[in-house]
Picture (cartoon, rainbow, N blue to C red):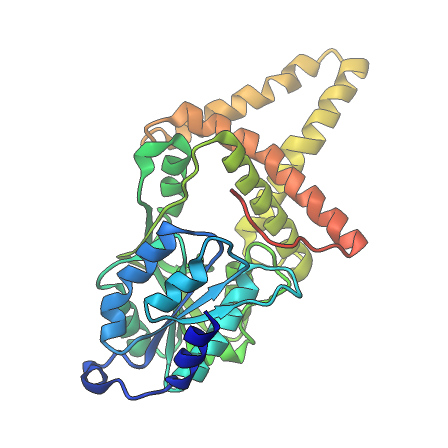
Length: 349
């Protein structure tokens, strides 16, 4: 593998021949992954046509043990193994990918970030590039992310529902997005200390500098969450709660109000609610009324989503349980912040 990497480095910046005339040499792609296996191969294969048109593809690996790095090298990507001297996270990997990309292709003006468990839509890069080129104030553009296999589990279906976010000018993007390199460099890239929620934190800093974030009504990526079990979903919800707490701490409650609201809900339903209920058992006859608040909230959520969810009651119950997982994530962050401990990586499956 070392010989493959050395040979690859020797060819960085080499002339790409006819592809230069196709006009995509100012776009680069950064893929990050950790033990994504076949999903990474499918991701890289979906980028092959862009590579043929002049895009430089960089893959950053975070300690995989499944041959991901070798698979990326075989497919012509600029591959980089993130050193294990510090904790792995998506922010650190994307920053490293952006650095390797600009070294390999100094003329890159737009960076498409893609998670290794996603497949890029055939015409997304052209649409995103055209949008950023037409609007000099736009720093980030994203599109519609879908789940590849929503029929395989209710958790996958819920993920697909989560990805169906409003279009237009927004306050944050997800892991898949195209960014203007100048804007990305201006704010110093992602905050590598953020374990989860690094995208909205970056978008917050971009907006504070006058840049805009947009979501287009266009197909962007297909994501394979591969969430088959409740335990997998629970672990992901803990990670989400961890991210909400860290964002609130880092930005002092200023970043993306939706994340602050989620943190407050997690605390209310998972800590304050049970404490109030326990206290009411001893001091008030109204504790049964408080107890009904939980099923009432499930009913409220189910009614709200019934027009766009095929399993509104299951969705409502899972979302309610998610407050407890989210609070556990916030508790973990509070403990880590107090003790100076940082997780080795931010896996959720």
